[in-house]
Image (cartoon, rainbow, N blue to C red; front, side):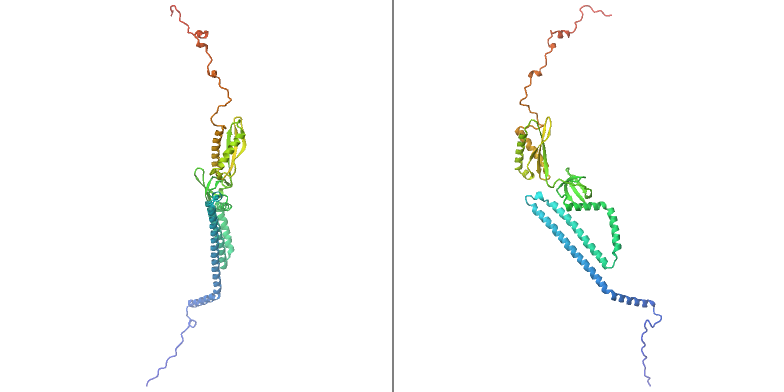
Length: 364
């Protein structure tokens, strides 16, 4: 007889709480996971808000920086195009130097773009740190101390940079100008924010730091004065001299290129000096800046030719015999007669040698 099999009841699996010897690390892991899940569930909205805020700040800063830089670049290009347009006119060479305007505008644009980028990005960085709940007071204090230390250590560099910025902004000088910077003088060939490059009269190149320039004499702005001193004899007629110089000035003002270089009439200012043997007549003219030396040389050349043609004698030339001077006495060059020329004269006989005695000569 078969005995029916009765199945054993299935026992439930024990849990970690029912097992008394369950490891403590498992319980701690479950607790940490639970806490992390609850923390994320509670703060995910805050994190999302902060992330979106930071992203919005970065996007706005990038857009504003791009717009400002493009606007500055467009402004600089417009300045350069206006300079090129004026350069093709008749007075373009006098009023505008295209290279000078280009370097000046590029320097100003570089400074403005750098300042704009620093302000925009610096403000955005501070706003991002504030969004992250970071206290900015210690950071700003540290930055201030570091800035003071860097300022003391690099004060010469900062001075050069600031001086260069103000020189360019105020247009004190530019490329092509003839300046006297105190420490050096010459023609400006390059203007930088830290160093100005000059070419001297002998061809040397001077590198002058902008912070070392205490005063600037610009010889190429406005107008220049050409002055010529003419020394003549005191007996010459001043009226005739004025007429001859006026003829020279009228002829020079009608010829090219002197008609453009002369910005005013050539004037006889009068007697600058009167001496016993000479008098100095001062001639002056207002010229294009930087062209006074060429005008002075041309004036001297023309005045000398005109004076020679008019018979006006200039001091320093070859001597000219006076018309009213009396003829020299031809006997003045003849020596007075000498008594020694007549051998029968008492003076000649007195100088005759004594004749030797006629008798025998007695000796010891």
